[in-house]
Length: 488
Image (cartoon, rainbow, N blue to C red; front, side):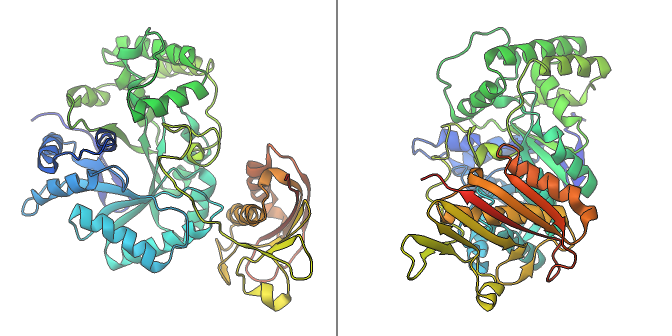
């Protein structure tokens, strides 16, 4: 019997190949307006499926990828061995009502031609726009209706994945960049996944093909020819540049010769051996030659201590990619093909809207919609000249829902996003904060709160006070207020 990729079960019963075929190439091939022939493209995918590469990943913005996958699925309606199809929904930040979310999911169902999505992965561009939690809870409802088999996220950092899980969203996977160049997922995100039973789906493992024999000892290229290589060239630059890449390639080549495999095999195997990783997403070749036989070699060997030590030594000559997973889409430096979000995101609405204070020219205020603001007579935040004052803020979502009950760290993450949204509405930013005050129900939970605060303010270092306040009103573990001196 021909060799096939190893398999793994994620969640309760999502049995998938450990080598997932990614269809991002479709968007690149169609970027000038021509659409691929869906039946011929489905022929190419069917060849992968028959070879055991029967799990496919795509997104709402991957051109006609969902339509092509749908054509593939029609060929398996009366037979066993139906391929798995994972897709992503990446809406523009704005209100996530039940109708908005249902329409987004229904469009995926219609394009795929199915009654249920195997894995619906949700991406959100700006966590300070708090509607992402509404979207996830609406997806949970649609899962209960039977429209979604499993819920995943994509490009979530450890803090916001932890927040979603603490708020009782049944997430089974997080799709993130993970490679010899981009090792951010090794840290807190993998720790969280091991603790909570969530699995990582790793993309970018070959850095757009740069982590391969083809680029060993090659001179630095000029303009990359496609979106993928343009994107991962920015990752390479962030990690120390072309010389850093060559150092890693040299070490990987030594390991590859030892095991009689390719550099790409070594790069893939290194990621696959992380216990938090369920699968690697490889590019499915629709119009180019495929590499299935070479890809299968990742299951023929394992890295030993000497191999890992050699790679670790190479890593020491590189720079860490800044931030946590997904930050490349949420803050500078944007590690995208264009170096910004122009190909991904148009104008997004603010979470809150500022309004003038009657009788006080130049003074602005913001309400978050909390039930308590009109009752007690206060604003979420007020701006007077260049000063912005943010009221004591709890993890209240919408009018009165307590987010992540009992989890002080997760509540702090949510609160600081709420503070960021309040500042943004008034023309400020978290970098403008000069003081924070933190009130805890239980001082024993100080560390999780402090770490969440430090994740946001490590580069700002405002004045800070943290005290145990005892019984806070409601089911809240922490309350935070902030002051900022806005520029301009």
